[in-house]
Image 1 (spheres, helix red, strand yellow):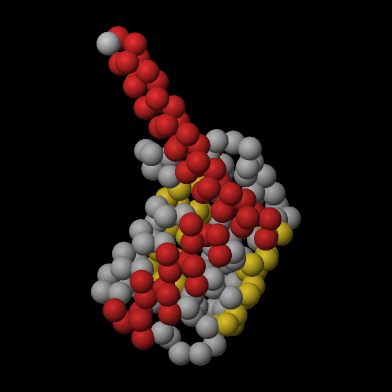
Image 2 (cartoon, rainbow, N blue to C red):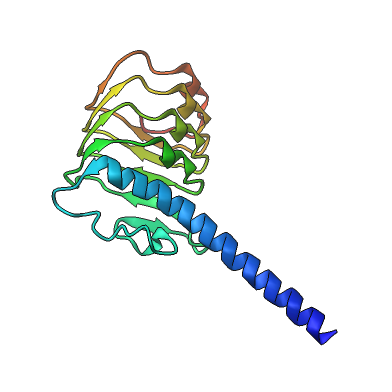
Length: 168
């Protein structure tokens, strides 16, 4: 009986560790994909090491008690490049702060997968294209700041259904 209990406990611990590593690595992979898409002349992303178990020790990243990424703070960091669809994999992300940089290209529609997102601050960049209608799926969104970019087209009607939205 003691052997069965030990085996069960060992198996449970092993599965928990594996799931933590897989989750941490998938978030780290998504963020490292962002890093690779950006030029960083001031080396603000220098600590972003994809070999670590999770990105919670990286500068400009905040995680919750479960080591899940909840915040990316890269506003006014002299970054240039483009956003990547992989950001949509950060399931627990609440704050995406990339304002006052030189981010170019479109807003990935995959950002509409960020169900926990409270604040999307992309203002004062060179983002172009249209605002993806998928952002209308962000029912927790309070702050959506996209001003001072090169966006075209109408504001998607889907955003009118986000009742939590206070600042646009």
